[in-house]
Image (cartoon, rainbow, N blue to C red; front, side, top):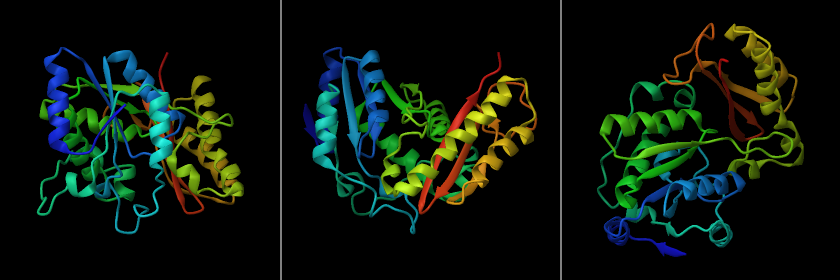
Length: 282
């Protein structure tokens, strides 16, 4: 597995691969990998000849009081996981390489980022779209794989790719869960044993609402109240938001008449966790 740390070298290697007719897939990550990330790599392998994983904890997407400094990092463990997953190349630039002195250019998707996590984390999505656009330019992929756990991020990236004319196919990957339903996340490492047990309320609330939906309930407020009641019964949980939105536009809906997504964000202790279910009409 090849490790590339400089943008100029990544440009050269990506161009060589394209000249030789290789199809490139990119899996952007911030490291501290888990089986959810591995599933993205496996999907990437199914769609390309060469799988590149980027490993970069992006400071632009963290607010001034968020967890950038303590975000979990383990280089040796990540390299071992990527080796086992058959990754061909790792792009691991430094912060100074990605954002050199005087850096002042950003990419903004305006409307889609003014809701959900965009309200709680001002500037977060501008950091995401800026770094992803730069990663696309560095690695020159034909396809890129993003997990559905960060559903708003997936929708925002799709919009950016469409609006800016990137010739890249965005492939969604299903949420990978622990055996008790908790969505896999690098931030799960923040949870102590009691908080880890409490965190099950996220998926339990979503699955309860999804069951109501599958039984025919289409009123968004009823589904949200079902989920809210389950989370509020957990003393260690504090709700940031629970919404039901159009799966394409992220506009909030009152009655589900087309495919929708039910995203939520909940604080368990100091950890802010997100999850969702997609509510697909028969």
